[in-house]
Image (cartoon, rainbow, N blue to C red; front, top):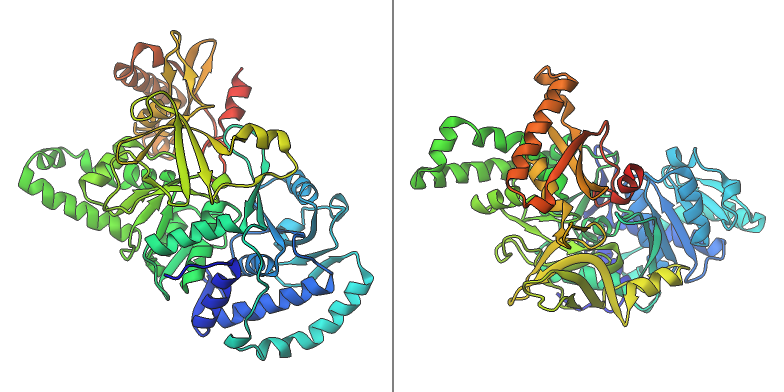
Length: 552
């Protein structure tokens, strides 16, 4: 595919070349063609003009994934303003803080979220618009308000008069700031990640050249669009190609996601490990544990046919039409990965972080090495901070096109993260002689053993998470001992008519069993039942710092 120089070329060319094709659909709702997307962008650009929005001004956007959200994002970056996408799940005070901290001059919000916000708490705003009804909710500029009333009388005629040739947006240098992404990580509180348009271009360019999507392909968008992973690969990438994107407009449960996959049969599936592991545990593991199946797996000729059937069954769960499933956001359980490789399932694992907009490494499913997260992107360099990067885990350092400019209005955090031009990811890993990256854990979650041993809690958690009556687990350290916080599978417990004492007894047996496979310095001394699902980041990583603080 051609090399794109400006972000606006992605948007322009895709609209021009796919004018009559469907662009966005709200699941079980309205559909916008590429022509209608162009008309909505034109309308928003006129609104920006009315309120005197300049290139570089910040515009906040909050709401559930839907077509109006996507149009607002495209209109903002193609105008030259900076988009500040805010996760719909953030608390009210956090939303106020982000709008103020980012110096946003305009806010686009979903109605249900706006109902809980206080306009007086967001003092920089010139205007607030609803992304559900497109209506003006708040105006602090009477002159602009009068111009807007005149605009809405004429804008429909202008929109209908648009043609593909008329689509032309300002040429904004890719070095300009494009996005400020506020995200809570697993090791601390929210910071505003400044991503240049160059970072967006680098990510989308790579996807266009390596993932294999073509115009009219269907994609389901269910990851939060306010997060870099979903924005880049469920939205910007497929839009730039001319795909048809369906947004799951409500909080996506695994049931709704899989239902949408059956109906839409997407060509590309992005997933977090949680979904894959849940399907494996609920649908595949019970079959594998049947006595007859255990015998079958040990017969070479028969097990091949059995694995083919399981592959077909699992492929159908995701709609059956995908090129591959790209798993990212957190480590995949080792047992699950080994099984997926055994049945030759079309999956791969990518590695990224918001600070890289997000992709750092990726390799297609046919060439990925077991346990790795692929090769570094050609726009990046990697360095492992250890004496022997092939055998000794060290912090992963990154530099190159994708890397953020820094944290907005937070020079201390920026200096502590980008040192001598290298982004310190906070992740530990090794890199083999072929360049494949293997993640070993997060440096800030790593626990130091009694004799200086490195303990990676994620590896212990993976063992617990495969066991019966466990939904998820979290290993913490208290007084030099390891404790497993366990959120039990309450549905399974109810079906088996278990009471709390029964669950505690089962967990103790699990603890003893897991410890048999662990070195003495990383054995778990106690299991504590946790009453609710652990709080997570948008990437579905547990916010470890919350539980370490609470338990000490």
